[in-house]
Amino acid sequence: MRHMLSVLLAKNGFEVEDAANGVLALERLKQGGVDIVLSDVRMPELDGLGMLKKLSQAKLPVTVIMMSAFADLEGAVEALKHGAADYVSKPFKPDEILLKIRMAEERNRLTEERERLRLENAKLKGVSRERDAPAGIVGKSQRMHDIFATIAKIADYKSTVLLIGESGTGKELVARALHDLSVRAKGPFIPINCGAIPVTLLESELFGHVKGAFTDANRNKKGLIEEAHTGTLFLDEIGELPVLLQVKLLRFLQEEEIRKVGDNKAIHVDVRVVAATARDLVTMVRDGTFREDLYYRLNVLQLRIPPLRERKDDIPLLVDHFVAKYGARLSRETMTVSKDALRVLMDHGWPGNVRELENTIERAMVLADSERIEVDNLPEKLREERAAVPIPILGDDLSIKKATLTIERELIRRALEKTGGNRTRAAELLEISHRALLYKIKEYGLS
Image (cartoon, rainbow, N blue to C red; front, side):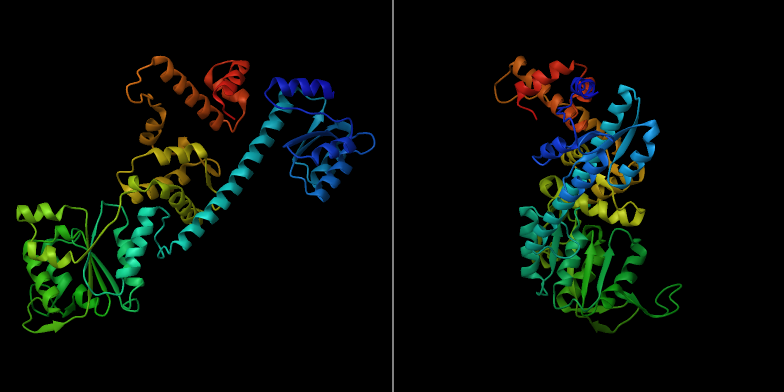
C-alpha cells in the first residue's frame, strides 16, 4: 500500500517519503519539511490515533489525513476529534486520495497566506505609526512620509493652504489632518465643494443671508464661513468658484470679515482656510477665469498630493485597509487577497486614484465566492491589462530568441503562482508535459 501510494503521488508532482509505522513517522516529522501526512489508523508499534496525540503534544505543524477500513469508521471519527484534517475509507480510488490531498494543500496555502497577510498588515501598520501618519491617512511611501512631515510642520499656522492633486487622491483627508493636528482641533471642520452647489445658492451657502434678502429667505441663516468660526473651512474644487464670488472670498481672506446676503453689517470671523483643486489654477489665471490676487492669497502654503501611480508602495497597505474596512461592513472579516490579484492591482495605473482603488476592493469583496479575492473578481479592464504579457525589448537588443525565453519564464512563473506551486496543475495550464515543466523550472531557476 505504501509503495502504491508513493508511486501515485510522485507521478502527480508530490515529493513523497514513507514510514512503516507511527514511531518512524514521528522521528522523521520532527526533522521538519513535511506538509501533509497520509496515515493508516491501524499500524504496528504506534497506531494512527497515538501518533496524532504525540504530534499534538510536540506541536508539529502538519496536516494529517487518515485512512481506515469501512468497518473501522469509528477510529477515523476519533482521529478527527484529535486533530486529523480529513479521512478516506478503504478501499479507495486514486482520484479520491489525490482530491483529499489537494484539498488539504489548498487549506494549508490559505492558512499560510492569511498568516502572511496578518503579519504584513501588522508590519505596515507599524511603519505607518513610525512615520507619524495622521489618523485617516494610509501610506508608508517616501512621498507620503514627506507629506506627513509637512502637515505636522504647518498644522498650527493660520496661513492658508492650497492642496493640489488629482481627483481621488485624498485631499480632504489631508485637510482634516491639518485641522486635527492644529490648535483649532476643538473647533469645527466645515467642508464645502464649490462645484457641487448651484451658483445661485453658493453665495448664500458661503456667506449666509438675512430674512427677506430674496424670495424664500424667511429667516436669518448662517453661512458656512461663519459656521467654521474658530475652526477650519475646507474649500474643495476652488477652481469652480464663480468670478463674482472670488471677489467676496478675497475680501474675506484680507479683512477676516463677511457680509451676509442682504445685510450691511460686517461680521468678524476667525477661520483657517484650506483650499483644494484638481485644476491648473496657473492656467486659469492666465486665461482670466481665476483671479490672480486670490490665487496668491490662497497659495501661501502649497501641498501637492501625489497620484496613486506615483506611490505604488502604498497599494498593499491601502488594499489591507479597505479589505478590513469593508470586511466589517459586509460581514466578511476573514477576506484576503490572492497574490495574483494583488499583482494586478499593483500593475494598474489608477487614473481614479485611491477612490478608484477603494471602489474596486468593495466591488471585489461583494462578488467574491470565497473568502479570497481572485483576479476574476476584479473589473474586466484590470483583467485585460493583466492578460497582456509585455514584450521584453531592452535597449537595442532585438533578439526574438531572448524575448521568447523571457516570456516563457514569465508564463511559467504565473502558472506556478496561480496554482499555489502545484506543478501538475501548472503544466496543465501551460499545456506542456509535467516532465517538460520540471526541466524548465530548473532551467529558469524558478521555485
